[in-house]
Length: 190
Image (tube, rainbow, N blue to C red; front, side):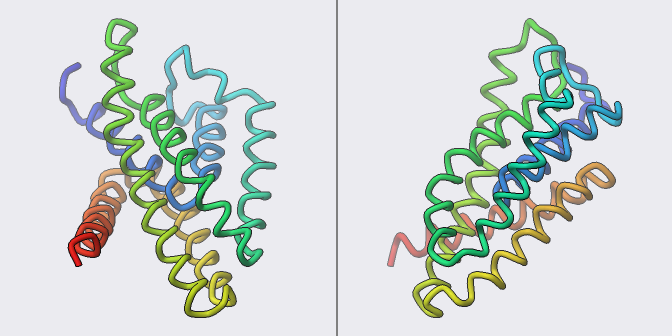
């Protein structure tokens, strides 16, 4: 896999979409499905299931339900516990679908996708989950709607911007991920 501009852009797009899965699991999956359907991005043969009309319909319904459910106090906390492993899975799939490489590098692509995309999505999800728990504790869940609105905006804008400016979005999301990791680690040592 030669390291050229196209390869770097594909990797940045994969990581950017993966990180946005940490805010909402299904928003970037829907974005990639639509982008693949309209041939804005090329997906490997084993990921063509993402660009089918049934997949787009399922991801659309799942996106609407996920966004709506985060506005229900305490259900949103339950969703965070479910969304954390789902975000890692979605982040891994998103990264795998976009990372370059042929069939002879499938295992390597899956491992790199889990380490980069899964980690990016999981880190963002854990960070937003901790923030929601703090909001639930301090506002009895009433502040969670504001938090959900911010997360929805972040998921939609980062997924959309990932296609337009993947290198910039990836850089911003990496900074956010590092900040969240530092906060989590520093809380662990107190």
